[in-house]
Length: 223
View 1 (tube, rainbow, N blue to C red):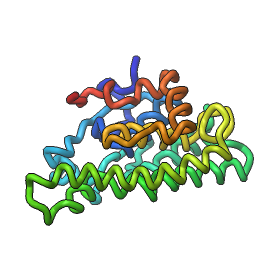
View 2: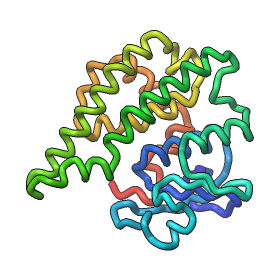
View 3: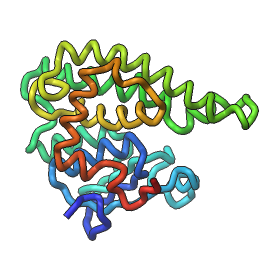
């Protein structure tokens, strides 16, 4: 059974189908075969700022994971928690330098690229423009920052990649990569410039955990 279906479980993931940060957590849960209940939070309807959700997550963002009697909000913290509490199958290498390489790639994506083109920032970037110009401006803004980040990321991956981002095993870096490539395609980034990124993501798409976590497989997907 797919972990993306609504099934009874002590673990609940509050998620939006197209949220990159939520997607990372879905991949990890699926990869580690941890069952959970999917609780949709519609960002376009502002459900994340409802009083009910704010009581659970004062930051009013997704993902939020309820697990082991705890509530965790930031995707990076959630992924590290899952890795420490469910270390097999591992998503971090045993070698200290290889782990640092994984975290370096995660930082490029999770700190330098994704936050600058998330929904709230996109809206703010074009807020002073006429409404008729805002969509095009948001698209251009996001495309610019993804391309800047991918220029760096491609060069880093040339040094670290085997089958996947770091060597021949799936790591947290791969979990960060796939959602960001999805966004790049949404914002019309020319992916031909990034052959290493494309090769890795095509390989990841073959893995059942990445398929199960894909936005198209979520119960709240709208397109």
